[in-house]
Length: 457
Image (cartoon, rainbow, N blue to C red):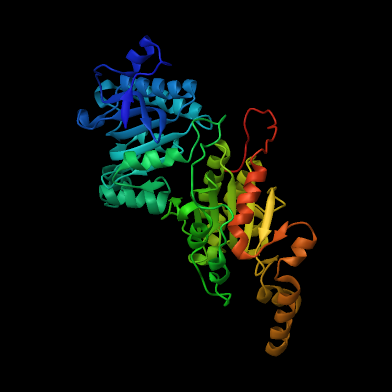
């Protein structure tokens, strides 16, 4: 990363955000290069007052975020802060409030990325939740209420890293999208897949991988035994350019896989059910993870490629009480609102409501593809026969299940109704997908004017 003076920044603004001069406080900011493009970069230094944010620091962060929005370039904040400066009083709180408001104004206009290289605690930790993507290294710690307060209010003793370390946020909270010791390298790699702002498309990337490359290995990837599993990331790596797939939130809600890739040199977002974990069923965390990623891709003009293999939503009393209805709807809402090109490929199982929310034709995808072994139905054979033919003996049950599978557990009924556009040979997957994405690259939708949506959260 290099800092530089920009011809687009006036001397007065350059002075205010700290380009080319010494800065007091714990935050420095300026315009620099990262991921091959100009970005506004702010950095808090824990070496001074453990990175406590004063009112001036908060204002500097706000001005930096606003500058990024005006210049239509990404905003990057590399943070290590002990929270609002106690000695600065309520003014410090007001300062980071200014920063939060400015970052919120950037949302959906320019990419907002944060990296955590040390403690980020108390109110300023909420800035992580306002970012599009968060990178953490092994030294990172983030929480709103620290171990002492947790022990005082709950009686539970917990360590710093157990409460808010990188493992906690990568596995449990979903705050951390990427774990990396080289946070600047990770930020640069993320930016390579994103445009500078919402009015641009991600820059194309030159590749030597032919768009029409055959993928015969996909024919044997899914096991014949229906209960057997496979790694859906293998499907993604075989299809995408040069096998490069940058997975986001890999340890959170593992039954759904999200990440960036390129197909024919174009940036694409992948959302995929993962049969290896909970059979690819959707629960609250998986729905939140997928919905968040779909909104990110839609904000910054990345086509969305959905790989579907799910038997449904994960059942459970606790899940229902915690809001499975709201969060399942959150995923459906994110897909239904997305205006970018959307391609859905059904690999194996696509049952019930989970089939619908994974970008089905009913939700509004542009192209729906299926492999010949795809099963698109309300439910599997066992459950259907149990409902339709109660009280029959075991032998007759097996016969009925076989009849149901032959009649319904295939892609042809959906294809006949126009719900699947094409049933393709797995060996043609990359070639068909690349051609479809090229055809959809000119897609534009008129967005209905409104203040904002009021979707499920």
